[in-house]
Image 1: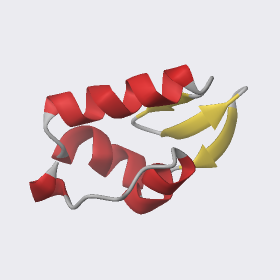
Image 2: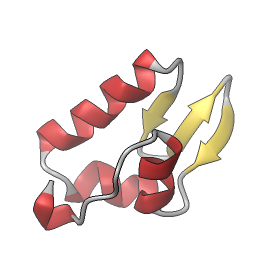
Image 3: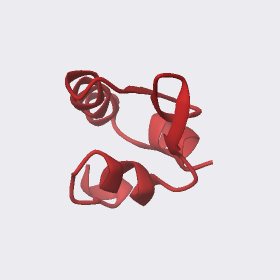
Length: 63
């Protein structure tokens, strides 16, 4: 659910930046979650994804 919200409630640029950060870390971020080697690492909440990427969580209106 969190990954879907992140993908569709953020500005397009914010979602793209997070996907780029994930890619640089060898991870894959899509609307279903954050993955490493096809294993789900985070995705239940947006905050979980930000934390897994080592980023400070931002509310959707602040992205």
